[in-house]
Amino acid sequence: MRMESTPELAAFRKKVRAFVAEHAPGRKLHTGVRAPDPGLMPAIRAWTAKLYEAGFLGIDWPEEYGGRPDAHPLEPSIVVEEITRAGTWPPIGAAALASAAVLQFGTEQQRARYLPRIRRCEDVWCQLFSEPGAGSDLAALQTRARREGEVFVVDGQKVWTTNGQHADMGYLLARTDPDAPRHKGITAFALDLRTPGVEVRPLREITGSTDFNEVFLDGVRIPAADVIGEIDGGWRVAMSSLGHERTAVAGHGVELVAALESLLELAGRTAIGGRPALGDSATRQAIGELATRVGVNTAMVGLAQSRMLHHTEAPADAPMGKIFFSEVNHDLAALGVRLQGTDGILTEGDPAVAAQGWWQDADLYSRAYTIAGGANEVLRNQIAERGLGLPREPR
Ligand SMILES: Cc1cc2nc3c(=O)[nH]c(=O)nc-3n(C[C@H](O)[C@H](O)[C@H](O)COP(=O)(O)OP(=O)(O)OC[C@H]3O[C@@H](n4cnc5c(N)ncnc54)[C@H](O)[C@@H]3O)c2cc1C
Image 1 (cartoon, rainbow, N blue to C red):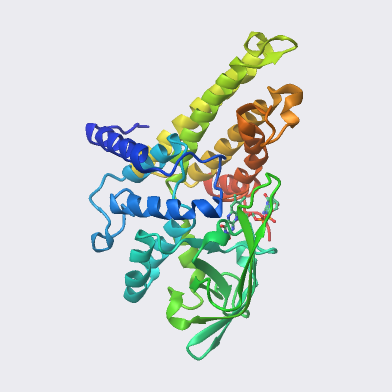
Image 2 (tube, rainbow, N blue to C red; image 1 turned 30 degrees about the horizontal axis):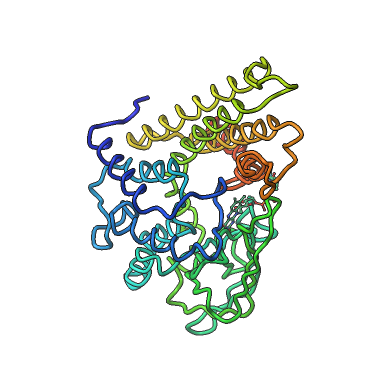
């Protein structure tokens, strides 16, 4: 294992940190991949456009679309880390995923149309993959796209669409050949969400916030020119663009370190049975154990980055990192609530709640991290099968 750090990367980090301090649109109130209040959207769009303009997003795009292909491969991770460290908004939506699909599989016209609009943040994208009966088993998706001349007519329902309520465009998967084997009859589309027949219905979650949506598609007409990649070749497009998402892990490392610092601060002001919580040996042990796991998580992030740089990634790296992060994150948030004793039942908005209810929200939201990007049970199967070569789960 080699942890990478060079004077150039340190200088880049300093530049990003100063940029974030000067331009970011303020602190984000909650942890996780969340949807902002509508009033914040103009500021988030302007911020995202500035990040592209400064060369801090779209770094690995071709130069003609504003990328810096000669940049160090760790620069995108440094940007994510600095945004997370500042506790501010990352770019919202699925632009990274959609641009990866358009760059690798799209036509020249699609690249020329969509990429500049992403850079200016005129289009926020959302990911229209999951359905009520197709999540972990994405190939079970039923949303149907029938060809009628130069358009596809789409009917179906998507769910868990993060930031769908703010999105202009959707990166959609729909079934174009119901008779083909499951993975072979799926096509990827760029869908303008203002098209008649698209209805976005926000979902209210256990946290009280509205980060997800249901998206209903009823006779939606998509021009054939908006197919991304080959007709019936959408599975390859989707899997390949999902594989480009390598920077989240860097943000997760920083998130845990920041949460541990907040936990220490909370414990320092908390009393258990009338005595300072930090004088309680069970509390100290719980914190010590979490600090150890946060340290291991940081080392795992370093290892993943090092392997990415040296092209020595192993199939189990990503699932192991994601499971480990999400479980430490859950236990940290749960301890943050437990330390508040009976006040742990207070929620955001109560004047007496610690840290404005951040811990309560983080505790409830921590379940989402055990599902997003692959449910932990499914990832454990992947570690067993792809990492250890154990027999595949029978279908
Ligand atoms: C924060 C967050 C953001 C998301 N954003 C989006 C988005 O923007 N767009 C989008 O399309 N989707 C999004 N999703 C949906 C996400 O991709 C799905 O939730 C995920 O794929 C799991 O699918 P599911 O919810 O249908 O659960 P299911 O697949 O039904 O799983 C239910 C339970 O069964 C278990 N399980 C399933 N299969 C197996 C198996 N083979 N072996 C063992 N256990 C199994 C799972 O681990 C889980 O505990 C998001 C989810 C979250 C949590």
